[in-house]
Length: 269
Image (cartoon, rainbow, N blue to C red):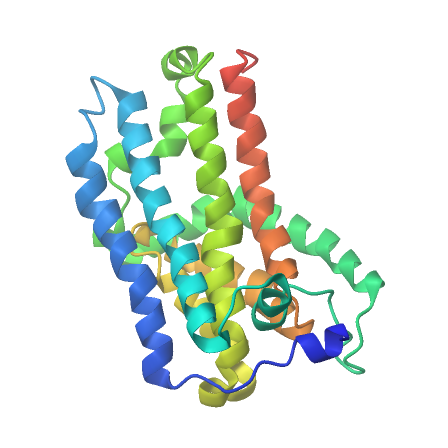
């Protein structure tokens, strides 16, 4: 069976089904991020590493749930979870030429500019976009106890993380489910192929926006996520009928942070 055949999903979701799947992912993440994590976390001033572990752990539970949800949906729709079924249903195939519909290896080269654009969005524009967004909606501001980035920048905390291999392991697990098995499987794999029936040719825009506003656990970054999710993840996935485009592009940030934390754990920071 060719890749062209493998990537033709049957049926389309209704708006109610799309929003139902969105809510099944977003609501647990909001509860875990705003209720469970703060309840489990020790005082950030007394134990900042423990607070970070509690938050990362709680969010990881939500990401794992998204993988489980994706598998439940595929199993109910397709009847099995064989690799051939997952490839077809979740667009886990080679990128295809938008004009001919045939797989083309050269299309992987699109990953180069996409990864560069993701880096520019995060490094050059991310803070500015977040500040602008929060200036419009101050109630979306990130609580100081949630700011993992600032925690990792502290020399005192970096010293505590030397040799903390468990912390690195937790971060890797969270990253795998964040940018691969969790968010991308559900939004680009499960949802995107079946949204055209409701949103037509703009299904990739709707998909990216849904992905962005699903971040109830991180509302301070919604504007940045809208731009990245719509244009850097959903658009290439739809254009090339290939979820790998979003998975690899989305994972660029995760790989960077894994190496950053590895350096901290090794005492090289």
